[in-house]
Length: 623
Image 1 (cartoon, rainbow, N blue to C red):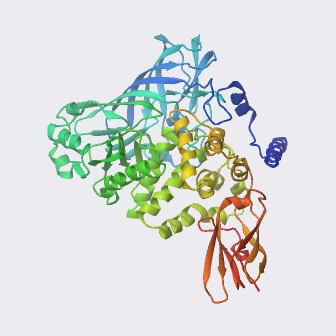
Image 2 (image 1 turned 90 degrees about the horizontal axis):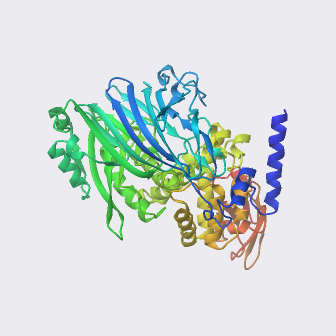
């Protein structure tokens, strides 16, 4: 087929650049660097820009009804150098419409009528809105939006929540999770223009940094948890409940803000027929809301910045029957502190985190929607992973739709590193191998070896999963081993300092690390991110003498991984000699290691968490 031949030719050209030790760069990405919006030293370019919105959203919900009604105003500013004649409007929850494009089969309960925009206005002027679309609609502007100008938008809409809750929808008859529930202006950026890739429920999201005010009106006795800061605590909560919540902001103790008795006695929310909960958040990529009149509510806080003693609130909302979530706040306190002070070692950037019991095991700014798994350790690990996403993609503004490895790979890495602290090295290693590596390395299909740089919306199945999670995580851990913790931290923090609150792409990450470490790491990036490599080492020749042993190791798979050479001596004793990925810099296919082991009896390779595709050739007698 012509399409397949063309794609193959492009990949061959990309492979050619590997030998030159430069990084393949698609033409649209190259154009951004040529225009100066991005820089080859990894910094935002002199002409970098990003657009911005200010959202004022009003939502009405009344469970058990599945319908929500909303209206919003958006002030959208065009900071680009381009004149915009139309806007791309994202309607993500249209993924539930029967005719929407989807990556997977869904049940009837997943389907709904989606989102229906009833009214659209531009600068107060009514305009036509096309609802006969999937997750992206084009809004023609009566007047073009010039560079540096703003436009005021108004939408009113209805949405039917799906009975089957995934990333959002009905959790139970009187419990809802609202995410992606409002029309939003899609990202217009410097390398793709309008982001009009349809959401298919596999790849995740890409949003601008916006300011939000969200008002959620619900019937009496319903509690609303949300992204941002609750602005009217005293209006929606009864005095004793409000006081407990305030105390939770300054204590390490886990407080029961709303117990089962409080809910039964109806002493939690203000005794009105309806209450409107108002949330605000600034310079953030999205908002989400949880609603229930049945969920318990726990809260505490943790110090996330030792220099200022700034605290972040940790909260949990959950079904009384869930044993997992009784530990959620305590687990979250530990995670907030550990992530802030160890890896990534950047203070938690937001005022709050809320764990809400649902079904998604999914992250949102200042929220996570996690399922009950009836396994205390796994529940902690899942929550750790979703909370780690705070830094990637919400602090860093990642385009998850195209480059999922830029956030899922980091969350997987931090999940592993905090797991070592929470359990021990052996347990964390065993879980990582079993959950993140085993299926990948034992699957020989072509999809598993697609380059990590492949756009996430164009791969599927385990090809997507491995490229988004396990493979990039192993790349980051290999880099950590190569550079050592101090230099790795310097590279990571330099990248984060430059690009938080912005929209980095892979090349910004690669070039920032090169610049910060003072090293040309293109050999490493090419091998891990632009190649069809996998993990497979093999012992070649072994020559042992009276003073040392010389071992040839073939890198059959090609990935530059760290490993240990384990030598068994004549007396039966063993000794490990650690090798960093630096051994593959000069020759990515073969390395010769000399170790001070006289008259060795046998040699084997121990790859640790970097599981080998053919472990049978990782050991050899020296005689």
